[in-house]
Image (cartoon, rainbow, N blue to C red):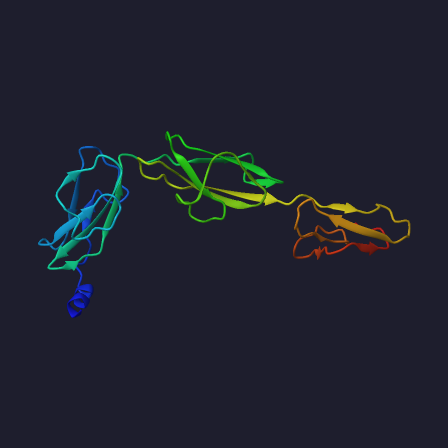
Length: 231
């Protein structure tokens, strides 16, 4: 038990160095080189994304021929280094193009489309501002938005590195409310009702002729009565 405990404390640091580095694009003449600062250490590696062990392949130079995720450890006298990782591929997917039928601000709803010039690429996106991954929603056609949001997207395929991210900020402008009341009061009280086509919208109003804002307006909660001509 003591031996295993000490080995867990005294691991080889730092982890091996993998060349090409993570996120690199290679050609078929590129050899994968894995080295470690501890020259006597044995390096074990995998190319399927699994964590290497002492039962994995012992490293010797090799050529990458397709997209792979290389993981490697260095081992000396039973002591293990942290795992190094590098995902490399012969190309990188083009970033998706995001477009909408408005210029950033819309009333009612807007439509968003996404395209990618890389053949067979799939686009994944989020609408809540979170980072898109392969676990996000997959784009399959025009998206209709009814609320403000940040659209973020990446494009991927099975053979190349994932694209860079693209984003689009869209803000929904509230529709103008409708005031239901007579324009002339003839000395009589008049009940005023204000409605908005936007469900859940807050309405602010004034009765002194000034332009209403959130700061100086009155929050409309229910219909009210006026007894003289007001603006």
